[in-house]
Picture: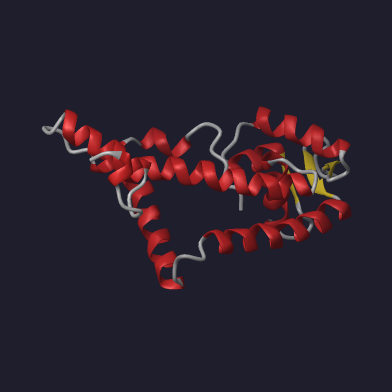
Length: 185
């Protein structure tokens, strides 16, 4: 089947699967339908969301840290280690982010009164105002990107993706601590 004769319900991933069926009929390439689409979805979602972040002078990295601090509740502060563990990044990666964010007055570093060796990244009033505005737009954009699905389909898809992740971790437990995994919500 040529590209011109494919109907509108097919996509690039379908073409890849079809090619593998033709070239290696002894293989079952259905998993490409899952992982190929996941890769495509992440790339497309990030491209759309990056435009939102840039509109507010943020990057995905700074958005992630602000969202992490905001959802932690008052006083909206964590150590670099706590940020690293709750966003699944290295402390070195977090420290670099915090330096940039401090320059932008989004966070400030605050020493613990109990133990001066402990330093918190605490969201500033400016950082809190900004993330409250950005998260509203972030979630609205996500809803718009999923407008083609019903609420029930969104719940089903989320459940299937959760099950898929658990299956990957069961296959290889090292996958649960993937380096530079960012949960930007």
